[in-house]
Image (cartoon, rainbow, N blue to C red; front, side):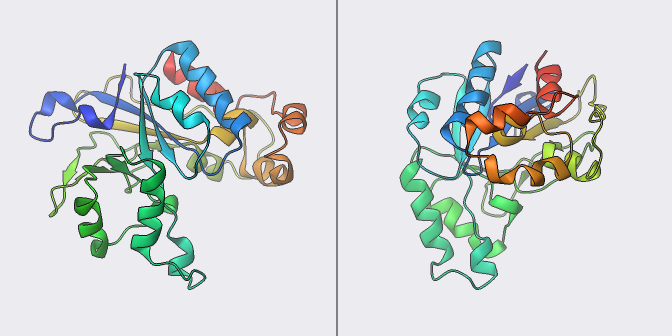
Length: 236
């Protein structure tokens, strides 16, 4: 059902038309939170791409699964806010040292700039996924001027939570396209929302202090319909 970015050949439409890609921005999640997602995906034996923010022993677990693909998730926000002494290329190089095999990049907060085109090509990045087209039908990859292929995001769990900001009830199930013959659908999830089974941004924000405390997190996990339910429903 799912494929990886590396399966896409831009000129060969059958490699992306009607396809789906399952992705996870790990966003500095604790090992316990990340492992919770890995175990779930391995249980269902599905392909997935992990956008990495930091070094963890679980990287080898991901590397050793033929269904999984590693990508980079650099954070340039502090550069834009003049809060970092590091330059963009330094941040880019640091994350590539952790995941040198990465061929795909998605920036934290989907930050991007035409000035970074040479960074992608110089570091053998073949795909990016920095453009968000929420539940838009018929999304097609875009070949940029540097020949890097942009594969826009179709669904993001945090976007749904944003739309459901204060609701403390079941999270409304999004209406995914039953058949997607004319485009590609990239699904973006976050391990923390899966571990919490988040059903609103309010719930997520109220539990921030315990996101790295697995025992406490398990105690407060949402029991209503949430992000984990949506992920499992999508996979099934």
